[in-house]
Length: 610
Image (cartoon, rainbow, N blue to C red):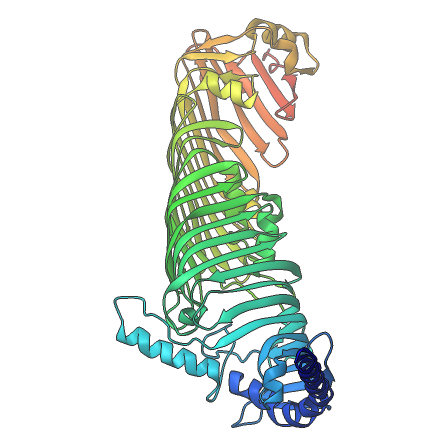
C-alpha cells in the first residue's frame, strides 16, 4: 500500500513537472504569437485612448520574469493620425498567468527616450492629454461626474483599476513645428508610482528646463481627482540652483486652477531666478538672495499670499501680496512691513525696470514672463539709504505700462523729516525722469557726521529741496544731464572747520592756497542760504551766503555735481555792504579744484584812483 502511494506521488510530481515544463516551453510561443501580436498594443491603446503602433517585432524574455521589449512605439490620434508621443523603446513587465490566458496585464513599464508633443493652448495646459475611450479618460470622466454630483463634499472614487509603476529615461517635451528649437523640457528621468487609480500616487523626476537641472517631487492622495478637475491634497517640491520651491496644501490643476496651502520659495540669486523665469533685466545682477513664504490662496489668474514673509538681501518684511497673471501682464500689489530695510536694495530692484531695456530678454527657446506691473506699499521701523539712517519709513512703488514711480512718503532722518518722489516715463528713445527731494528741520551737525563734508558745512537746523528733470537712456543718465533747481536754508549755528581770521590772513598774503590750511576753527553764523539752478550736469550757484556778526561771506559760480569740480568767485562783505560786489570789498577770492579739495586764489583789491 505504501509503495502504491509512493508511486502515485512520484507520478503526480512528474506530471506536475511536465506541465510546468510545458508551460515554460509554451510561454514564449504563446506570448510571441498572441500577446505581442494581438494584445500589447491594444492594451496600451485601451489605457491611453490613442492608436498604438510598434515598428519592430517584440522581444520576449521569460527569465527572471515574463517581459517584453518594444522598439519604435508611436501613440497617434485616431481622428487625424497625428503622433502625440513617440517612444524609442518600452520595456514591459507582464503577468505570466495572464499571458497563458492570452491577456496582457502590465505591472510596470520603462520608457526609454520618450518624446511628448505638447499642443499650444491644449485643454489642461501642461497636463498629459488622454483621448478616445481609454481607461484613464473613462475613469476621469466618471470621477468628474461624481464631483458634479457631490459639489459640497469630496466623492469616494470607484475607479479601482490597477495602474502600476512607469519609469521614463531621457525624455523630452516639444511643441509640434518647433523641431529646430530646443525642447521645452529635456533629459527627463523619473518614476510614476500609482498602484490603483483610486489610490494615492507620486511623480519623482529630474529634467532640464530653461538651461537648469530641476528635481521635482509631486505627491497626492487622490491624483484622479486632480486630473478630473477636483480639489485634492497636493505636495510639490521643486529643487534647482536658481530656486527651491515647496507647496503643501490643496489644489485644482484642471479647468479653473486653484491653490490653497503653504508655500516657500528660496533663491540664492534674484537675478539668476529672474533669468531662469524668462526676465533678463540688466542691473538685477547686483541683487543677491530672495526668499518668500506664506499661505497662498487663489486661481491661476489671481492669487493672494497672506502671512507673507519676504527676505531680500537680508531685509525681512511681512504682510500680504496679491498677484494677477495674464498673458499680457504680471501685476504684483500689496503691503509689506519691514523691521529694517535697505532702500538702496529696493532701488536696485526698481530702477532697472524703468530703463529703456526693462523688458525681458530671454534666450532663444526659453519661456518668458509677461511685462511686470507693481503697486506696492513698503514700510520699515528703520532703514538705510545712500549712507543715511532713516526711521519710521513709508514708501510706495508703482510700475505700469510705460510709467514708474518711487515715493518716499515719509521718513525721519537727521533729526527732521524727508520726502522723495521719483517719476519715470519710458519712451522708444529712452526715459524722461523727474526727481523731487524735500527735507525739513534736519540737523546740520548730523548731516556733517553722516556725509563727512565737514569744511564750510552749516551746523544749524535747516531745510533742503531739489527738483530735477531730464531725459536719457536710464534714470541715472537722465538726472546727470537734467535741469532743475536746488535750495537750502539753515538757521543759527556755525560753519564747521573754517577759521575766518586765518583765511583772511592767507588772502592778504597773496598766492593760492588749499582751503584745508584754514580749517582749524569754526565760524559762528546767524544763518546760511544757498540757491542754485541745474543744467546739463552743472549747478549754477547764484546765491550762497553765510551771515555772521562781522558781515557776510558769499560765493557764486559753477559746480559740476558729476565730478565735484568747482569754479566759484567769492568775497567778504562788511556790515552794511552789498555782498557780491568786489568793488566794495577788501577781500575777494576765486575757488577752484574740487569739493573734496578746494583751493583759494585771492583776488587783489582794485587799485585806488588817484
